[in-house]
Amino acid sequence: MNPLWPLLGSVFLICIYGHMRCKLDFFDPLSTKLGIWDLDGWSVAHLVLFFVVGRAYPAELPLLFAYGAAWEIIEHLLGKSRPSWLGGWANCEENKNAEYNTGWWFGRISDLVVNGIGMVLGWMSLRRF
Picture 1: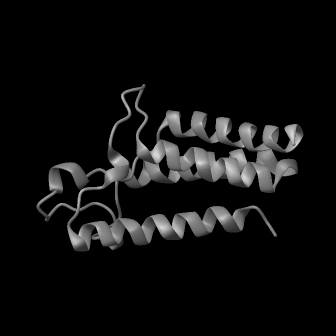
Picture 2: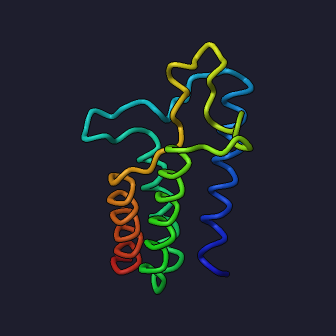
């Protein structure tokens, strides 16, 4: 299987989660800061996802990193100028948690670092066992 499919599946789940977060009006627990750099629960999700795909596709690490970087660029662009068709898909301007739920789309350098660490740890786990 192409390593793009698990990543696209994750993007799909993230979009569904963001939509539900807006519609059900709840605080995103993954936005909770960890107190290190700008890391939060989403950083942990990045680490786990890229550990799994790094372990499943060890020969594709450069391609996986490129996919992750492309997604961060897309997130950055969506955060700067979100198209109107994305209304209600993650940026929750009109709910009781609006102060915590706006600006959901943003690419971060830390996500790229965490992605790389996750991939390397996944790859290393294959080499050790």
